[in-house]
Image (cartoon, rainbow, N blue to C red; front, side, top):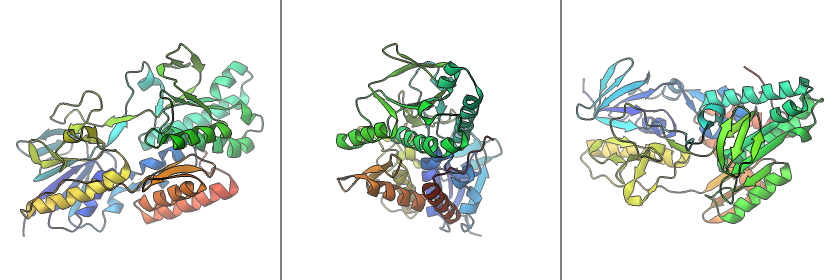
Length: 411
C-alpha cells in the first residue's frame, strides 16, 4: 500500500477546515486536530448571545463535514508540543509525525492591559462565551423584573459594549431588536425605555475599516434606534460594579461586553517567540514559516513582515488561505514552484440591525436595506453545512416576520 505524505492541521476554524476540505481525497493523508468536535461559525455568535439563533445552529460536528473525505482523520485533542526539527507534534492523546504542518488556531480577545477587563467582561469569540453572555443578559432581565431597588434595576438594565467595530455594532443593533420586540412582550412590568445600550469607542468614529461616511451613517442609525454611541471614550478599568473611562467617568452596569480587538491564539507549546503586541507569527508571502518551509501559518496567526502589516483577519481571507495552502502543499509534493498568496477582496459588509447595513463592494459604498440583505445572503452561503443553512434561513424568516426571538433560554 502506497504511503502518502501526511499533512497535520491544528485548528478547525475557517482556515484549518478549508485546508482539510481542499485536500479531501487527494494523494495525501490528512489529520485535523481540534480541542472541540465541532466547527463554529463565528460571525453569527452575536446572534446566539442575543437569542436570535440557537447554539446548535452555528455549530456543525467536524466529522459530519469530513464524511466524504476518505483520506482525512479527525482527532479531538489538545496539542502539547511541536518539534519542528523532528517534525513531530505531541497531543494529550498521542504523538504524530508530519510531512507538512498547518497552524490555524485562530484568534482570541485582546484585553489591552485594561484593569479587570479579562475577569469582568464578556468576550465573544467562542460558542461557550456566546451562551454565557445570553444566559447573563436574560438573567439580568429576570432580576430587573422583580427588584424594587431602582439603582439595582438601572445597573441590571444597562448594557455597555466596548468596541466600535463589526462585533460591537452588530451586537448593539441586535440587542435593540431583542429589547423592542421580545422583551416588551415577555416583561410587561419593565419599560423598554429603561434599558440602556451603550456603545463605547475610543476613536472618533465607528468602523475604521470602512470610509468615514459609512461610519458616520452607522453612528447616526444606531442613535436613531436608541443606542447611546460614545465616541472618544476609552475604558481604563472594569469592575463588578461597572467601568471607568479615561476622563474618570464611571458607568454603573452589570454587563460589559468586550468587542475591542483580537490577537492570534498562539498556544504556549508553539516553539517560537510571540509578537509582543498582536501575538502573530511572521511568515513568508507563501504563508510558510521563515525557517521551516514545510510549516504554514494561516488566519489570525499569520503576519507577513515584508507587507508591513498584518493580514486582514477576516473569514473570506482565511478561506482563501486554506485553498491556497492546500494547493501549495500539492505543488511542493510535485516539485513545482510555489507562488505567493494573494487575497482577492470581494468587498466588505456589516449589519447594523432593523433592516439596515453598510458595505463596500468594488470600491462602491453601500448603506441601508440592500447591504443588510446582501449580508444575510452571504452569511447563509458561507455556513459550511446545508442543514444549518436551511435552519438559519427559516429562523431569520420567523424572526423578521414575527418579530420574536425563539432562543430565550437560560441554560
